[in-house]
Image 1 (cartoon, rainbow, N blue to C red):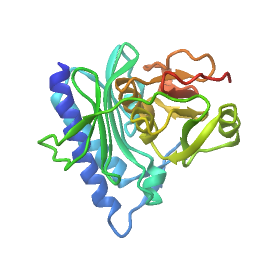
Image 2: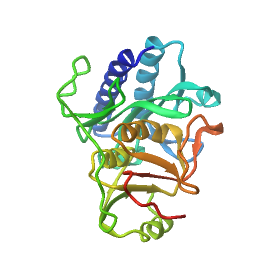
Image 3: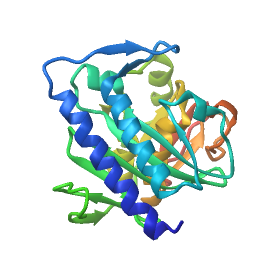
Image 4: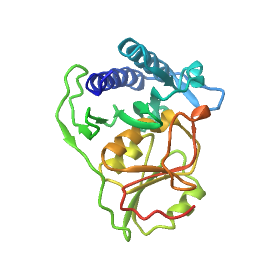
Length: 265
C-alpha cells in the first residue's frame, strides 16, 4: 500500500458512505437502537460501516481493520491498521442537527498519519493528501472525481483572546472549569469530529475533551488536525495521544493550535 493509492479510496468510501447516511437521514423516520454501552445506533451507522468495511477489505486486504460497529475487530491490535467510525455523532444524526461525520484513518506506530472526515449534511470534507498535508474539498463530492481543494492550516492564536470549541452533546462542568483557565474571546459548540476540523482550519484554537472517547472517534480528526499543523495531547501530562491502546479507549485530551499555552489539569 502507498499513500497515493490509499487516499483516493478513503475519500471515495467516505463520500459513498455519506450518500447512504443522507438517504436515511432524509427519510421520514428511522429506527434507533441502543448498544450494550447505552449509545445509540441506527441503520445509517450499520449501512455505512458495511460499505466502508467491504471497500477497505477489498482494496487493502493485508491491513488490519478496526471499526466501531464490529465488536470482533476490537480485539485486534498492531503497528499499522485502518480505523473507522462510520457515523460519528449519532446523537446529532438522531436529533437531525447535522453535525455528524464519516471517519476513516490510517494509524502507523501509534500515530494517525492519514485520514478523512466527511460531514455530508454540512457539505464539508477534510482529508490528508499523500504528502501528509490537509486540505478541505469544497464540492461537488463526486466519489470518482475529486473536486476543488484548498490547503488549510491552524491559526496563530492570541493567548489573550482564544477561540474555543467544545462538544455539543457531551459538555459538562469539568470542561467549563478547564476552559475558564484560559482567556477566551468566544466559544462555539460542534458535534462529532468536526471539532478537530474547526481547529485545523483556524476557526478555533483549542478543543479540550474531558470525557470518554474511543480511538475510532478521534483518529481521523487527529490526522486532519496534524496535517494542518495542530497537535493532540493527553489531558493529564500533555504527552502525545497515541493509538492501538488496549481496548481502544482514549484518555481525556486536548487538541490545539501549537502556539496555545496549555494550562495544567
